[in-house]
Length: 170
Image (cartoon, rainbow, N blue to C red; front, side):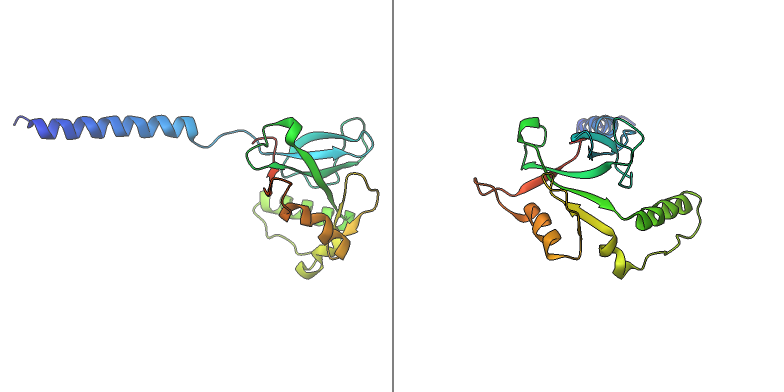
C-alpha cells in the first residue's frame, strides 16, 4: 500500500520534529557540571568559587583556615555575566553547631538514612549570620540589622531595577 502525498509530508514533518527534539535534548539537557557558588575568603578579602552544597565557613583560598564564607553576589538583571556589574550584597555563614548539623544531615541523606533533627527549625535563624563586606560585625538572622542587610535584595538601583543574585554558572 503506497503512502499518499499528504501522509508522506506528515511522516517527514514528524521525523524532522523528532530529530530536533533529540538535538535539543543533547544541547540543552541536563549537564554534569557541578553547581558552584561564590564564597569570600575573609583573610584574603577575595571572591572564589566552591561547590554550592558547601556549608560555610569553609577552607579559604590561601590556607587551612575556615575563613571562607558564602558571598551573595548581585548584579542588575541580565548583567550577571558582566564582572564589572557584579557586587557583593552580603556575606553569610552558619554557627559551628548548625554547620555540624547540616553536615551530619548531608551524610545521612547520602547514605539513605533518616536525617537527624539536631537543631529545631524555629531556632535556625539564631544559627545563620550575615554581614556586609565592609563590616566585621556578624548579625544573627533574627535581628533587625540582618533584615536591613538582606533588604538589599529587594532594593531597586538608580535605574529602578531589582538586583539579580548571581552564581558562577550564570
